[in-house]
Length: 394
Image (cartoon, rainbow, N blue to C red; front, side):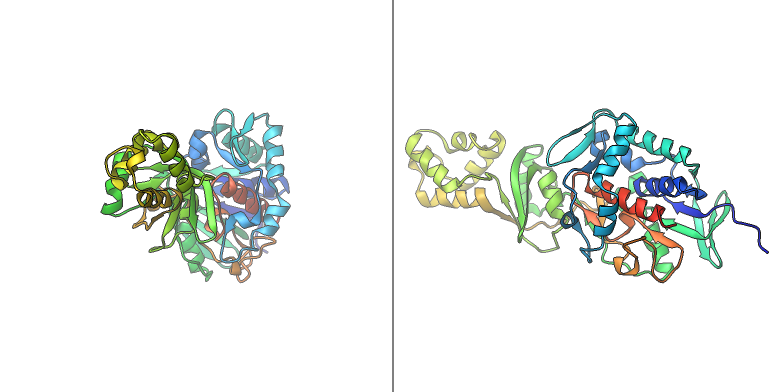
């Protein structure tokens, strides 16, 4: 008779999902080993939210997640909710606040969230080993993980190593490669929540405006987001652009409303009648940042006061203000992407347990899976929820 294995579960990846899975399994009395090649746990948590960690969102709902199977995330999100995580944060005495649109941030530092998770893991008896580089994973009667610090064996293995976004933080396609080796299909993988780039003609206007921000509505088909827009030296960024980027495909045209909630044509004609001697850039400066107002006036209207402008010219400018059509040339890629869209196909996983349906004992959670949330704490909640579900099942 073989001696008992030292671990019940090995979790690969000490990020948000891996830590939550380890804590949950450990609290159930499971012997858990958590491995990561990084020298510090929760590295992406530490940089999130400008260092304050946007750890969840009060408005979590399945329709705010992107997946080839829009129903897959429902079970996990319903079983471990944003309120469950908020309760954990409260128990640890971490002060937090709602910023906008339901986004919850630490008052202090993201390090408080990592410290909380590590304290919970320690209390649950989790064995965390950092700086372990994995060279091979095999499966016979159990899973064997080969590292530069030796071999580790367990009957259950959890893939929680995330996606390709932000490689300088140590992100790799490890989970995708391992999934392929075990016969799990992948969906299309691409950068998400990422700044958009533009060709020379559009950049001629955008580059001099680098750093200018304003509220806008970014639209693509029926999908639209009303948030801040930011001009950059390579194109456009800011929350509105990051949100719409997850829905953008190569060659698609998006629209920007630079005066949301306002009919620009009516507004300009009112100004033409009421402030006839004012320069167009001065008028536009009432509603837009001055650098943007100056640039649009120079590019789209002839010199002279607004009272001298033709209605047709003002209407053309108004159409741009309420519906600027732009076709990005691409994105800034995984280096600037906050998340990775796509991943391990949910068709190969149980939504109740996160276990692979064809490989008993193999689980996948978090960003490695084809479930991607909106900007604003949604992806952290998916990490907490999917990690908890797997932790209850390993």
